[in-house]
Image (cartoon, rainbow, N blue to C red):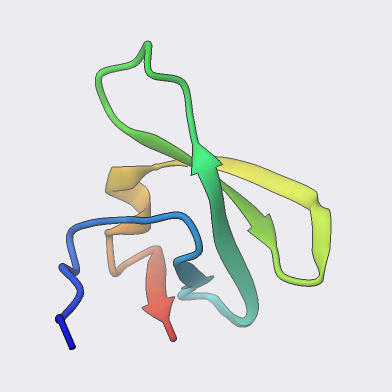
Length: 69
């Protein structure tokens, strides 16, 4: 099995905020291609009406978010 590149974000990836590790956010889609920094839409697990758009940079910053299985 291939190892996932930790610097790559794919739809379906799961993250938790470092200050709220009980709430899981799932990558549901990509953001606007107009901006130079990639963005992703994330939805709260179990509450798909709760959506956020976050930059790739923020999702990969361990001070803010941590990837979970």
